[in-house]
Image (cartoon, rainbow, N blue to C red):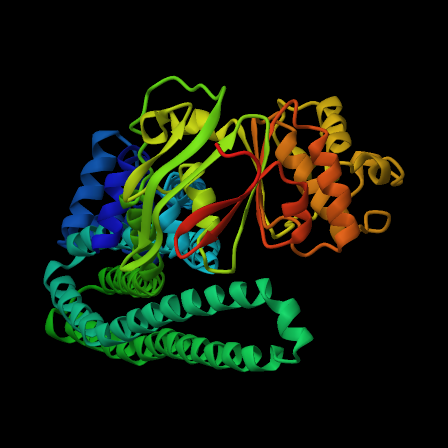
Length: 570
């Protein structure tokens, strides 16, 4: 029950209101059910006196209640009270279920928002070691299952509250028989607890397999083009099929445990009622109206307890998703990005890497590297794959900090500056031209409502994309990938560049952005960007000759050191 207690503490006010509504609903139903004893007595012709002589605490309480208000308990009045109590109970249950439904939506939403905030506020090192599919799985599947677990838990509590009210009524009818029956019923539930444990293990396995399956599936889909080009998608498909079969096994065990619990409850319940009837009729020699009311109440108690056990089982199946999601949020928060710098930002002269050393664990990537990017220049960094070019970009953007040395902006160490303000002055164009299946307008603004359409058009013109965008059927409102929105690789790259330019950055970084383009398209993009040098500084990393030829200043990165190969010495 640790899971449910955690949520009751997380939402104390709403949970208390819901539980109170459920409790009062049970009390209303119990009050209505208590009218059955005098109703049965009257219907059998024994009348009010017989009800009183039956000796049960319930009969005496009802007799005293009607006497105190000078009301004769006729069949009509008793039926009206019975129906009114059930109506009140239905209304309260409806209100409670409505509140629970809203809370389930709130739980899922809160968990998703906490995950998003934790992930987006985490350091770049967290992203590097985190499978994309794992975060997606937590956001979609685990948040939903966590909310479902809360729903099942609240239902279990509601059933326990109802069972408590029914027990009070039954005790007032025949307390000895009720205690014996409750003892036997609890034993039955205890016997069936192994099915709950089995379901919990199946739910935990389901969480583990789903996390692995969706992470692998996401990674495969991101790499599907090269796999299909090499006819190797079936290899990946077989791995996914194996994980899918593992998920099926977990689901089968989950379904079996749930159905086995339901199936075993029925014969054991029959034994329970047989014993209860024998005790009431033979051992205690209770009047028939008392026996009927007691048996009815015991049936309600057992039904509520059985449903509570099934809901508890369902909660145990789903709760592992909550602990997995909570662990994901905790790890992301532990790697929250810290921005200690507060010095004002100035970029008037240059960006300089001074004696920079950086390593990933034990693998050294940069060793006392020195290079300078003058303001309003087209600077390039070339080198073989794995030489550390992208690491240099990560240092300049403040995603990583050097182990030794400094990244200086106008002689001010970057770590002492306001990093978020610095990043707002950067436009970044990656090698992967990832465009969303949405309008060109949305792809450029990324939903930023502060950016107007005129600014989007201006950015598209600067990126050399306006010529083909303006010819599309809906212009900037054309949806990328749909009919009329099909564009080439070079055109996609220009839209990505427009996205980087729309916020009017002071530094534009091209991270292998032209690698996949043909020489002519690459040359055209370089010519377009050089026209912007009076407004921004461009830093491109590449191994293409075009970039090297067009750059004002260029460095070659080898063995962790930068060597200037073009331009005046700086």
